[in-house]
Length: 375
Image (cartoon, one colour):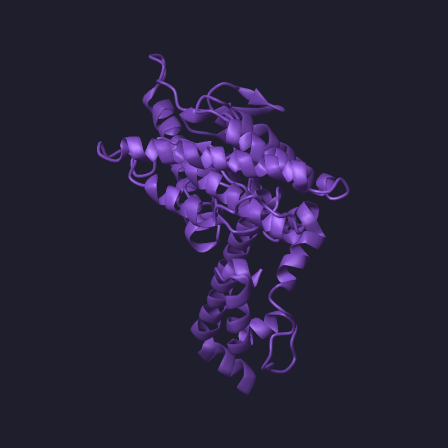
């Protein structure tokens, strides 16, 4: 919780915790501690141990803390991209990574390779840089083809030389390498990363970033209190209208409640109603609508824009800009932890306002209290 509230990493949180008595008191310490109680790597083991269900339970409680303020007849929804911690993918980079990983496997299993291609692959990868330049295009294309040829060669060599009792342990890994080397530009469900093969290429029409490599994330928030009611990560790049139903199911499961209306932008067009919940998207006003009706609809969809800064804060302040966690379930876990941090921050702001209001009342009636106590 502290990690998400204050945007710390596993190791930086340990350093901050030692210096901050408020963090130590929050964690239940009765006396000031000069050492962190565990190794920062234990955070990784803890996340793996509780899994997706444990993270979802923590997120559900962060919503329930707000009580009635979390529930309303309307809800705002939108989708964004949570990028994975991967480099910009190219065929040459993936082939170079396959060559290096294959050499690592051969060294571990004591397989004698015909050639490691360590220096050759490094020079070939350098030749593929700046391939759009007219004077480098031919050389870059040739180097890229050579890298893929070498990668295929070392993978086949592992298939032939690995012992029969060891080969099944690397079968999935080697088949992933073969799939990467045989995929073409027009293929669907392409692999963009070796350590995070679930990464998808998503185009959201941004001028500064044409493509984002990660997973689509859908949100459902309260329009008044801005509490995040539901958050879900999706495989691939589904249409925005297909992200609403899983969010509603999650809210119904965790809170036993459904809003009457979900307000979406034009990207959510396609479904007018889901599970009895009306899906509202902007559309041209009818000629028969009165000025009051037009103002009411305009106000409703203007309020929908409140979800955009929430997404911005989740990315910049709660570690949802990039997913640094590992594993196939990491996009969902990271998104839920970010939403948990946001909900806890909103609760802290609410408690702070109530405390300030209480202090204001006390000081405003101070003279009366002094007279009361003296009498």
